[in-house]
Image 1 (cartoon, rainbow, N blue to C red):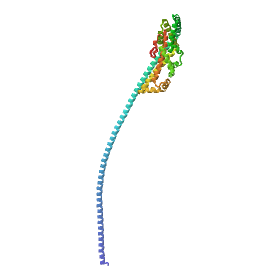
Image 2 (tube, helix red, strand yellow; image 1 turned 180 degrees about the vertical axis):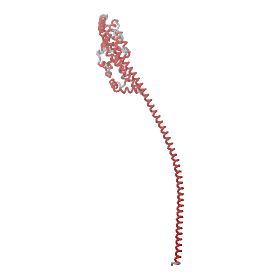
Image 3 (cartoon, rainbow, N blue to C red; image 1 turned 90 degrees about the horizontal axis):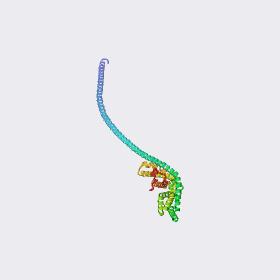
Image 4 (spheres, helix red, strand yellow; image 1 turned 45 degrees about the vertical axis):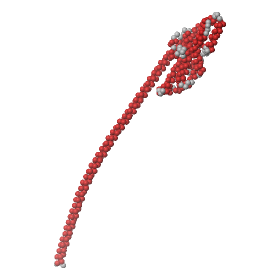
Length: 384
């Protein structure tokens, strides 16, 4: 087994070795081919990856560019919207400023107009107050002058009584010495009776009535009584018409001596009645009533102005409403027009009586300066 078998075995071993080597070589080649294939695959994969990366980068760049463009567009839109909003805000601000300015100007104009009206109203009130003060001063001066004259007349009236008594005695002596005493007596009786029948001085009360003092003290409540108004009217009628009645009665006497006697008797009777009056009280009442009539006329004018839409007049009337309503209620009149009429008539009556009394005193040589009396009182005007 060692001879030929050994050779065969050696050959087989060599073949096996060679086969093993060849197999190892093949394995190496396969391994190399595999490695090469892997490398190729890897290279291809790397190349493909680079392409993908490049494509991805390109896409990313394109997307970034598109996003940038879109961002620019959006930024432009935002800027445009912001600019438009700023423009609108500026316009609205200008409009609001203009409206506020117009409102402020309107308020300023309204305030100026209101101040102008207030100044005009103040000027009117100041002018009215100045006129009222001037009238009050004038009336006060006239009242002082009238009071002085009345006091002087009262002092001289006592001396006039003695003179009147002497003249009455002389008249009686002349009547006794007349040729026909019976006819003269009948004529004297007939001449005296009409005077008494027409509310002559002998029928009038010589005492000072209570209401005269109230009127002189500016308390006009008595004017709400019809009896007081009737008494004042009767006295005023007598004061205005007594001289005319006396003249008519004297003219009916035929005898000159009887005419003189009747004239003296009638004049003495009238003078005695007038001298029995409180001239100072009647004058003060006339002045108080005249002032009240002027005030009532002013309130009537304010009422008319208020009715026509004058706010100042309405405010003045509103401030004095409570007092004036009570005052009108006491007079028994519904409005200022009628109040002024009642006061004016009463003032005219009181002025007529006081004027007649002053004229009687003046007939005896007193009150030579009666022209100093305030003409607004109309004490010397017999036409009232």
